[in-house]
Amino acid sequence: AAVQGWGQSELSASMSAGAAVTVLAQLLLFPRAVARFGARMVCTLSLLTLTLGLSGMSVLTRQPAHSVLYLFNRVGSGMGDTSTAALVAAASTSSAERARNLALIQSARAGARIVTPLLSGKLF
Image (tube, rainbow, N blue to C red; front, side, top):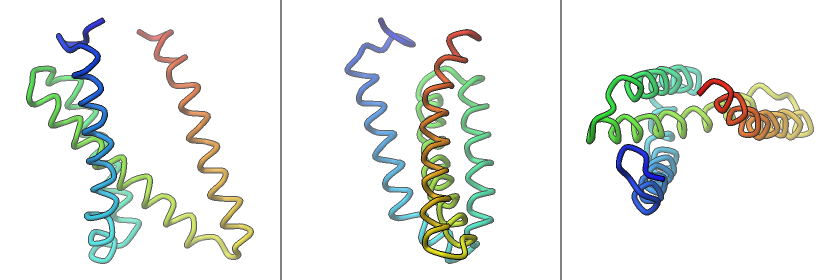
C-alpha cells in the first residue's frame, strides 16, 4: 500500500534517512547545543521543534516540505531524547537512582510505542 504515492522502498528510505538525521543530531548538534544553552534549554527547544515539525506535517502534505518537516521533527526527537536522559542523570543523586530513573524512562518509551499505535488505530 502506498502512502502519498510512495511504495515500501521509498518509505524505508525515508525512515532510514530520519534515523540517520537523528543520530547525526545526537552526535554533532547535541554536544554543542548543550555547551552553549544548557540541557534544560535544549530540551525545551527540542519540544518546540517537535511541535512545529508535527504541526507543520499535518498542514503541509506536499513534497518536499513534508519530508523536510519530517527530518526537522527527527532532529527535535533526537535532541529531546538525549537531553531528557542527560537531565534525569544529572538530577539523580546516586548511581543506583540514576540507573532506576533511566530504566523508568526507557520503560515509559516502550509503553508509549505499544499504546500509541492502538490509540491511533481507534482515532483514525
